[in-house]
Amino acid sequence: MNLVNFWFVLIAFLWGGYFVLEGFDFGVGMLLPFLPRDEGERGAMFESIGPVWDGNEVWLVVAGAATFAAFPAWYGAMFSGFYLALLLLLFFLIIRVVSFEWRDKSTNPAWRRAWMWANAGGSAGIALVWGIGLSNLLQGVPLDSSGDYTGGFWNLFTGYPILGGIAFMLVFAFHGAIYLTLRTVGDLCERSWHAARLLAIPAVAVGAGYLIWTVAVAVDNNDKSVFPPVLPAAIAIAAFVLAATFVYLRRSRIAFTFSAVGTLSVVATLFTSLYPRVMVSSPDFANSLTIQNASSAHYTLAVMSVVAAICVPLVLIYQGWTYHVFRARVGGEELTGAAETPAA
Image (cartoon, rainbow, N blue to C red; front, top):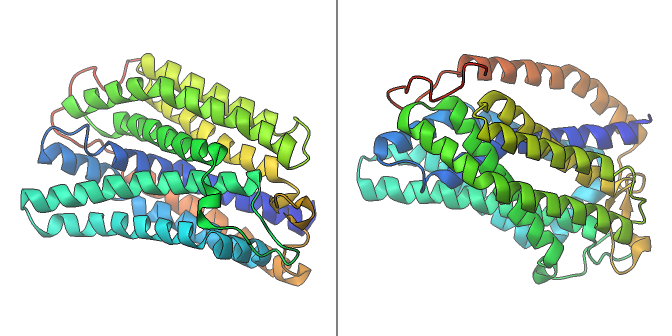
């Protein structure tokens, strides 16, 4: 594997890690208006992700920086072409971050309710924009011979990308509901189980439909054969089905594991469907950006590889330790036998 391929795979891994970890954060945020019955339970939901959400955001920073350094032409085309969409994404990210900090500045119910909705709206908006944006990379956008975007904002909103946005929202909400069954106790945990069961079928159905459409778009728009994109797509669908099955069996840890595998496999499907291109041009396919014409010089990739070999393992170790430290459940009186079955 040469350095260009290595960095394409590493960037896919970084984006996958971001969506797996921030995915349940976004899911918890989207469920804030619906699960808690009082301010105490709402505070418990904030507390369940409070120690880890900012650490999860580091994956976005690292993935974005790695994309910029390894594939500057790809980064530039996305930021010029998707400028308004990324500005909207930045707005959602800001109000979500601010909601964590400002919610506790007052005990006024209206104030706290406003920031609760800000977190929920920001979480849903981020998931929607990411799904639409990543899907457009594969479906194809109008690029000229210099790799510059020549379309408009509304060109991004067609059937397949919109389904991608909805699928990301449902999958993250399902992922977040399962996470809450691991981190909460009492009535809040019971309602989290109920939410996970309600979300299981739509998340699996829409997610599977999106993955099947992704493989079809890869074949039609990116000159790919069905294999290998169908492999991670099949793994993702199987993982989501198993996650839903174990939700109904009240096995939270293994259900969360499969929902994480499914989320990671969705990203793998998108990147496998893109390779060896990073941004498909439509209707002029010849203007597509490839890993070769969008990458940095060999020396730059070599230096980055040394840095990544040192830093990425340290980040993984630190985050693993963080999740171990903040593993205790939150949310009131624990119900005996309600949070987990003995087999779990």
